[in-house]
Image (cartoon, rainbow, N blue to C red; front, side, top):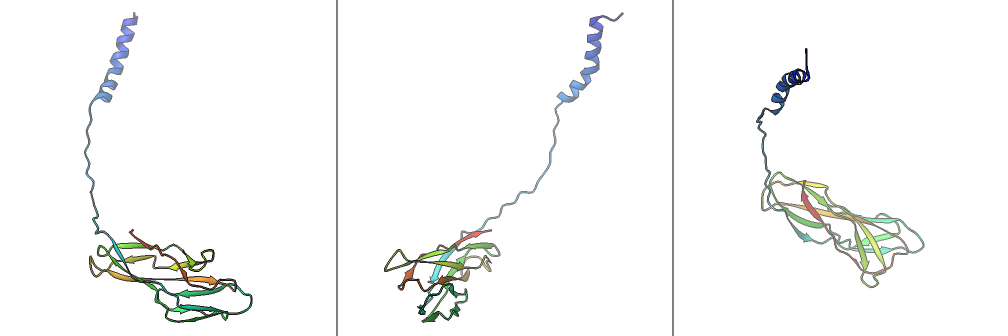
Amino acid sequence: MWGRRHILGLILLVTLPAFRAVAAPTSATTTVTVKASVVKPLSLTALQDLDFGTIALGAGTWSGATVSLSQAGVRSCTNPNTICSGTAQAAKYQLVGTNKETVQVTAPPVTLVNQSDSSNTIQLVLSAPASIVLPNSGMPGVQFSVGGSMTLSSTTAGGTYAGTMNVTVDYQ
C-alpha cells in the first residue's frame, strides 16, 4: 500500500533530475569584432565674407523680388524691380579633418539687421553644400563656399544690412 511517504518519495525521485539539469552551471563563449574609428578634429576657418553688393529698389508698390548669390559667387538679380551693382562674393571657408571622411555642413538662415534702424530686418536663407568628403588629412583640407537668397519688396527700408552666419561642420 502506498503511503504518504512513498508518494512524496516518488515525486522527489521523478522531479530530482529536472532540478539538477536546471541548477547545473553552463558556460558559453562567443567572439565579436571590435572597431573604433579615430578621426582628427575638424577645423573650419572663414576665408571670405558673403557680400551681395548694392541692390537698388525700383519705384512703386511691389513684393517678392528674390536676389540670390550662388555658392560659386554668381548673383541673380532678375526681377525688374531690383537693380544690382558692385562686386558680389559668396562666403568661403577652409575645412580640415580626416581623409575620406564625410562631413555634414549646416548653415541655418540669418537675420540681417538694418544698421541704421534695428527694427528693419531681412531674412537670408543660406545655400551651402549638404556634405563634403574630405580629400586629404590635415592641410590643405578643402575649401567650400556658401551663398544665399533674400526676398525684397517696395517696403524694404534702405540701408546697410548685416548679420552673422553660423556655419557648423560635423563628421557624419
